[in-house]
Length: 129
Image (cartoon, rainbow, N blue to C red; front, side, top):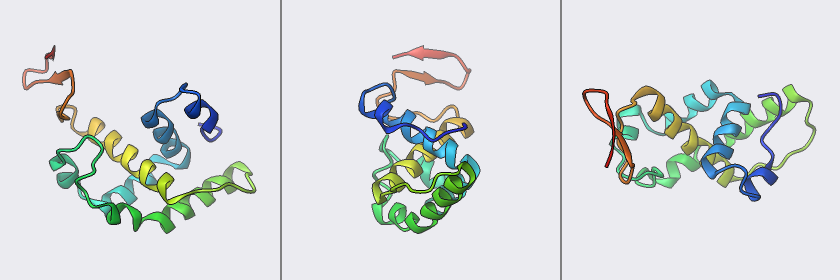
């Protein structure tokens, strides 16, 4: 991604919440954000979550990564020549959770969130429930 996500696209419903914050993770750098996620919770804890928004992992664990995330954002801004940008604690938590969800999808395609309509079963056939 060559430029940061545009909040107007999110606010005008051209991007979903997940798409918007995953785009930020991509812009900042998936690998760097992934390392922060793994400091919040190891993959086993992420997989054990029963909440589609990972709200059963204490918020304080996500919040504690805010300063490190701000540094990653500053580095990305410098790389792109952006002089000023605001970044909130809420942005940090949303980007980390979006990245965690992306990691779960990529690393374990059989992970079944409650409420999913499509579930990949052991025989690798996708069914609609």
